[in-house]
Image (cartoon, rainbow, N blue to C red; front, top):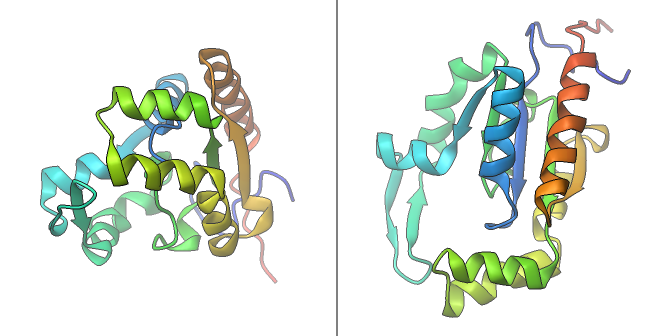
Length: 182
C-alpha cells in the first residue's frame, strides 16, 4: 500500500534523509521542512546541543555519538510524526520511526568540491569519497529498512534538490495514516 504508514497511528509521516556528508541532506531537509511545515531535526546539531556523545574522534574530527542517548532523546518526538531527520547514518534508528528513508547521492567530483569547501581533508575527505563511491549509505539503509521505504535521489545541483523536495512534498501529501491490522 503506497502511502500507508507501516501500521502506526501517526497522523503525519516521518522521513529520514541520509547520505554521505556533503550530499545535501541539511539543505534538502531544511527546504522540505519549510515546504511542509514539518520539523527538521539535524542529528549532528542535536548531539552537540544536548551533549549526546562520548567525546571526540580526533582522526575524523567529529563527535562520537551515543546512539542510545540520541534514540532516547528522539523517542517521544518521533511518535508524533511530522519530522524530517537529517543524519549521515541510519542503522541505529528504530525502523518503526520512519515511513520514508531517502538516501542522497552526489557525483564524486561534485562531492569532492563540496567537502573541500566544508574543510574536509586527508583521511576524513578520502573516507567520505570512498563511502559515496561504494554506496555505503544506500547499503546501510537497504539493510536496515524495508525495501519499499528506501528511495535513492540524486543531489548534484540546486535543480536536483528542488526536484527532490517537490517529489517528497508530493509523497507527504499522498501519505495516509492508515492502520493495517493483520
